[in-house]
Length: 256
Image 1 (cartoon, helix red, strand yellow):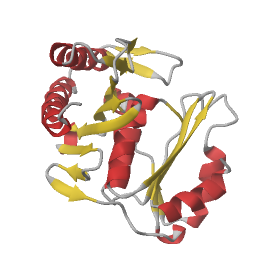
Image 2: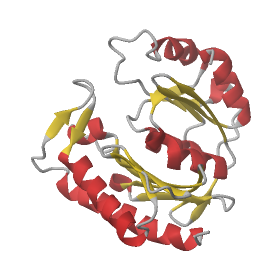
Image 3: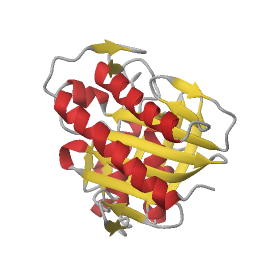
């Protein structure tokens, strides 16, 4: 098996490098295209960032498989698979709103064993190796112990089909908002999960996510002492993250 701590050092360098590239391009005239709908965007910076990461993986781990948001699956029949979201928060990036993330995870035999998330505008580098705890830069982090919804700051998001689908999270939002201290919608699931891991947000839930959105961030939450509950639905993954008490209370409200 790989030396995951050494691998983490390498991946952190990759994430920083891609993040620096994204910051350099943030104020430039980059191309923006639509994918599944007018609100599901991809920029040339997404695509170039992914190309950089895939080249790093292929140069260093040529036998490994890859699951990437923009280019899909490269299956090398390996026990190791990289799961990458090169720019989580594309809509934010396209509008010049400085919350976005580089998310890189490594699976071994279908279990995430390494996760790195870099938030370029904040220079926040979150990372975790399974069984070794979670860190922000070099500082150990842990989840919030708030167990009362009335004292909790939650985060959530809305799916790309929110205008046309009945299951668009608005009903859950309406149920929970009166019961909590506050709610935030950052536009990046990776960012939200990092803030749960570090205790800034008390919990997070969202619907219809893809695995690359949450692979690294979910490991961070677990290694910071939190609980992750996911449901694989036809339209994507539902996730609830936080301490066990808040996760249970949120699940009771959203009816999953």
